[in-house]
Image (tube, rainbow, N blue to C red):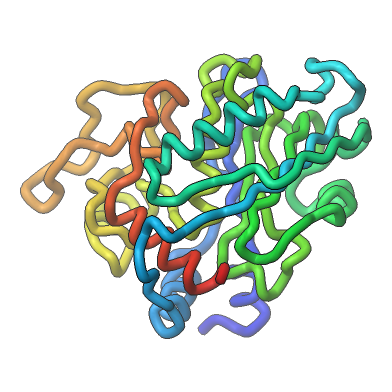
Length: 285
């Protein structure tokens, strides 16, 4: 049985999307036990508020540029790249959820740029600048050089974490993962698309493997994402890791919640959008 402490940990846990050092690959560094996810989903089922209409979901974005110096290589990404990233979000969510840049602030702090990561003092200090309310997305772009953040592409909090730790809410991404960035294979802005999916309550498409897919009661808790036993990488053709009549459809390697390369990612499913807007309506309004 889950204790209050362990449930609080579950609901405030961040999803960590692993990134590259030399050859870049996605990977998850935060593990949540399946039984803990079941408890969290029971809480969601008992408290969820259905969104009136998917298209009603609008999100303001507060962008925090954290750099080690004033150069682009040092993390000082220009307004044009931030605008391109917001455009990518709106394109990827296809009008179901709209994103508007509310403000950009810039901080030169080499310690935060290099060392901010999950459960670090640098992250705590950096996130003290958070703006807006529970329905507003705060994005922090950093370098992920050392410590718990070394090699990451990004990480995010879940909607259910807000009430317990509002100061931690938001997404931290690698500055060079935005459109036009220098991270080969991951510079079309899909890191933020993926992480914003987590911020809206989505799990990975391969959550729970073959046994946990294709249902709203296990796995990624979305019925229309085909079963997938493990994360994809690159952009594999014809990948089908869950075979047989019980698992129709090839792996959803083009889904934004898989681990494929940016160029391979093209879609959310209708079920994912329904879940995301309901999570938003329940926890972020």
